[in-house]
Length: 113
Image 1 (spheres, rainbow, N blue to C red):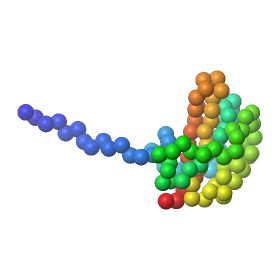
Image 2 (tube, helix red, strand yellow):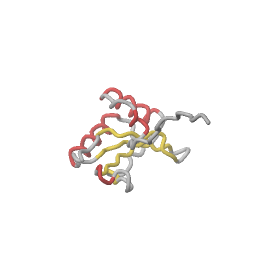
Image 3 (tube, rainbow, N blue to C red):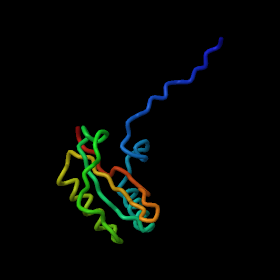
Image 4 (cartoon, rainbow, N blue to C red):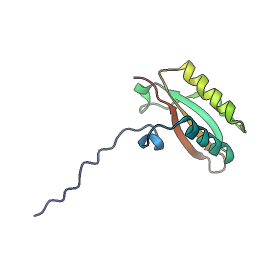
């Protein structure tokens, strides 16, 4: 009986969809924020310590930014969250009010373990 060499497809722990890709540049992060705003989605910032990132719901940084249309405000809040919690992962989520789901979610800053 011949054996089929399937390979080892172990699942790697990633923080989100873009986790399989190289780290995003500042320009790429700004493009993602622009996409969230252009779609009318609500930006929300969350953070969590790397030790808890896969076991707990992440803590929200302030309330979601309902109706936000200024990319600079979102970038400033991302940086403020990162300054307040430099060891935490910080991610941005774009909530789609129409489908009541996450339209986008990605880690902007990775914390230190």
